[in-house]
Every structure is written in C-alpha cells, then in structure tokens.
Length: 119
Image (cartoon, rainbow, N blue to C red; front, side, top):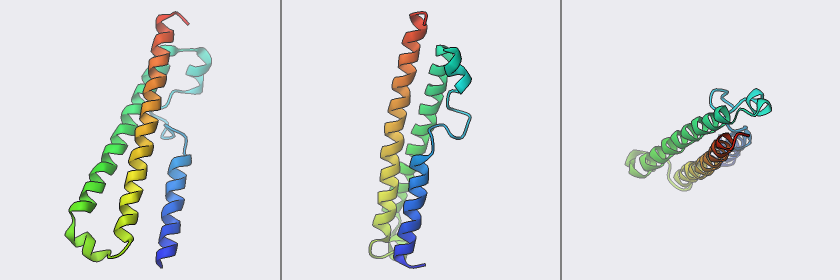
C-alpha cells in the first residue's frame, strides 16, 4: 500500500469517527424518549456519561501519542512522514474528543439547571 493510499484510508477512518453521532455506541447518549419526555435528570446523567466516555477516548489517544514519541523502534520502522501522520491523527482525535466532552458537560449542566427549575 503506497503512502497516498494509506493517508487516504486514515482520512476516511477519521472522517467516519468525526461524523459518527456522539454516543453512537448507544450506551452513553441520552435517548430520544428521554428528550421527548423532558426527563432532565436522565438527560443530564446521559450527557455526563457521554462526557466521561469521550474523555476516556481522548486519554487513550494521549497515551498512544506518548507511545509514538517514546518508541525508537517505531521511529526506525516509519522514517519520514509516517510517524508525523500517526501523531497528527492522535492529536486531532484528542482535540475532537475533548471538545465533544466539554459540550456534553455543558449540556448536562443545562439539564441539571432545568431539573432544578421544574421544567
């Protein structure tokens, strides 16, 4: 597989990850029924769980990025731009997951406030 094909495949995978709805795993995201029912406590809990999951994914990629930096064997096996591409991939996902987690936390806080206000 040539370098351009590998980069294209990496971009496609990244695109799928970024286009997948938050909580698409099904376990963390609030459900449509909770939204429809206006169950603010359940919505807040769902967004908190989603934020926790997203922060764990960001941490996993931080660890992967650190491993790329520390691995002399990997640097020898992937001279040139290969290592930089892997590190950029990790950093983009770290940034995306961290941003999405912050948004989920903000939504949880909003729903907690609505619950307290009796909405």
